[in-house]
Length: 282
Image 1: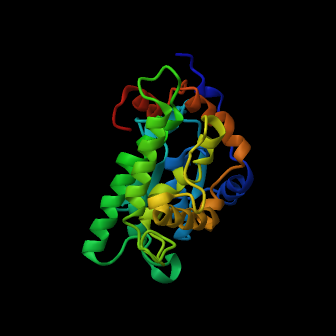
Image 2: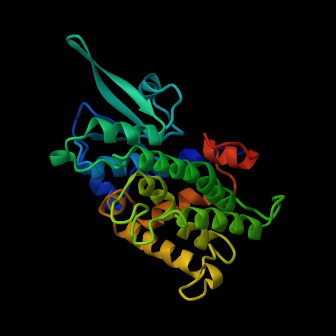
Image 3: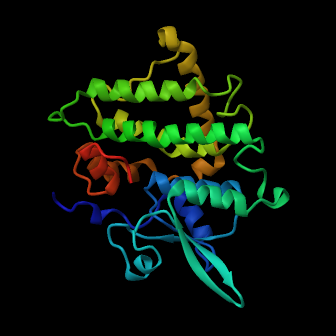
């Protein structure tokens, strides 16, 4: 397959560019990021939500610099370089996997006055329940998103099957939301919302690239599921207006070219390859 991913733009645009520039100064806590990556956006959102000082370091994960690979041989973004004390010495240690980074930031920066409330509930049962539905996002919704976006006519599944599968997983998630809203837990923004938000604000790409688009019902057209879709619309509207979401998004035009590779099923990303093979996402 042609190596098409190396041409990805090496900088964010719009609000994300301004956020990156505001955090470009040298700092001991470093986020190695690709502006286009939804997994990166999860970690970036938490940095914003928790009012954490950090340095944003843009890399192209398809042009992996030796110094980045020395820090994280897996070469994945996001990677968080964390200053760790060893006696009188301090060295940078890497963390990767977006949700691991998110939970680390939430736990390590836990001063309520400086960092705000935790993004996970204090109650043990509610915290465990949140992790169940964060797992649903990662193991069900996100793969269904890519399977739909990467559909091409020669696939052994139809675009209607891909659309229905994504709808099914979204509805299952929404039925577990607090009915009052707007967030998964009701009035409290949490890690569950963080886990899905980056893909939710990219759903328009399916409308852009795929025949008949995402196909979620318009208001009043949801039939027996109208209440579920109304709750989805409430949550999605709140996500789209969340400061941490808006400030970590580039201009829409920038995503069109990046995600063309997915829509044509030509991407060489590990996510794209796993989706193509029907494997678990990396």
